[in-house]
Amino acid sequence: MTIKVGINGFGRIGRLAFRRIQEVEGIEVVAINDLTDAKMLAHLLKYDTTQGRFNGTVEVHEGSFNVNGNEIKVLANRNPEELPWGELGVEIVLECTGFFTSKSAAEKHLTAGAKRVVISAPGGNDVPTIVYNTNHETLTGDETVISGASCTTN
Image (cartoon, rainbow, N blue to C red; front, top):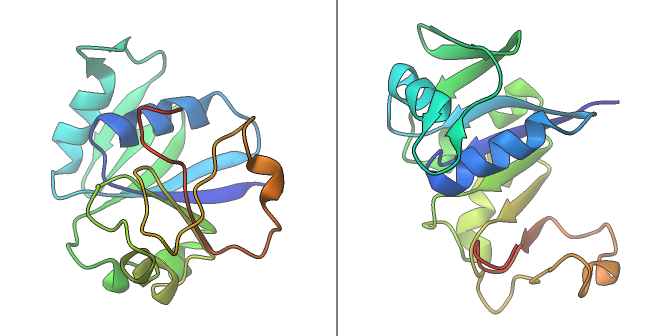
């Protein structure tokens, strides 16, 4: 079974997460929400000045781009509650904007239909901070919003 992921924010961290997901079986990015248009996002993915060229094919379409044969919808909405995560079957949102770091702000993705949210920055006091190989075994599976600590931690 493939896990469907949405990425909110396609800056440095969102693109790094995307690149890593491309290397993992069973996870598929189905949508990216960023205020930049699909053409520019595809260009930034293909020609990353820090990570180097993307090792794959990237084709731009109106409102989407195709990466290695997979169509990825590109959205541009400032309000996470208005995103079509539910319609797209998104199970996990990677919150990579740095803006929606409190539990109440991140839960807007749940209102939009996502099942879980992982914040790429430190979350509020009410958000569990999980660092793999440090405390990941504390996850119960009931969490809907977690933080991966600082994006520089992992």
